[in-house]
Length: 508
Image 1 (spheres, rainbow, N blue to C red):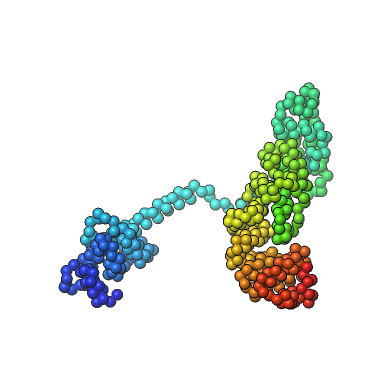
Image 2: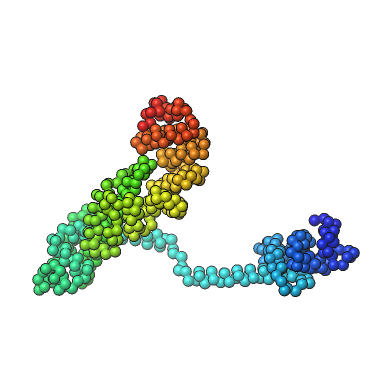
């Protein structure tokens, strides 16, 4: 600011304590006296103009002071930011009542800015100490060559282990029924000889012999099956492992481990199948919701709900008999055709979460149930939480499809089109995406956008005909064109060009 203008404004605000004295803005004592007067006006009278004038008066001096402090204590600190921070704190703190008047403003500024830099340095020093302490407790970095060798060995051992478990599974199922029951009761469940005899209705005096014979038969079958495998490094390594284990004094323990691993693998497979059936059941329930099937492009239609429910019941019984007592209890899953479809789907999806957690497919299906239950904000929250997750491509595509549907249901046409644009790079020819673009552009009155999406949808259908897409083109799209006041002839011409010269009716 021009020094003359600054001097005049100081006189207007009584910023010069001694009227008539020549004011020198380069003199620290003059600046201090003027600053003290302006600060008092700001503190007592809430005069913001006085504070503005204080800033203009002292800014050059504060910059010089901040520069000296940062050069000496912290060269990486920006002097301008340090001075601005002091003025910000002054603006918020100085109006507190009961404070004594500031006699030396520049001295106060120097002390405050110096203390702020020192505090910052102390905090940085403490942080560095904490970081060093944390780093001291971290394990030393792994040698990449050792890590690669270890990973290769782990993968090889995992392959051997899986082959051995598969081999045990085959040999176990070749045993007689009584021997299989004995091995499970004794080696897996750990029942006593007397308990095994009672449970399986065997003679208590013979139970020891039966158990030993079952172990021997399983071990013999495994070794015999190994000899029949094609010669390979894998076979030789597994043969060495098995024969070493089964010929050792720990033979019983090793047989128990093999049987337990085999059953654990079977239980894991059973739980995966249970999860797939629950998902299929939820999908079957949703497809029975009115208008759901007409608005959804389903790649693989599920079986009837009653059929899936039967499979669920049988699998649950098998898992229980196999000892999987952690499997979810399914009595709360509605399995009759009269139950509410949306409630039945939700029950299945909650059970699915118990089995495989909040997986992508479970969350997408749950969001879809929310959409058709008119719980649109909840559905949107679920789907937006999935956008950044690492999901299989089909599941990720369904996230974007259903998020668009949720926004369209809320009449947020622009937001829905933004999601369609976001997914265009990954799925440019997705019929569902293009149909949603048709719907959004029609509601926004965007004729050119609607026509472009309609043509692209027809071209996609021409390359890969689907009954549902044909119904959309000939039904919903024509209705949307009518809403846009597009002549029927114009729509027919667009479809005729897109479909290689056939008439528009061929879309169906």
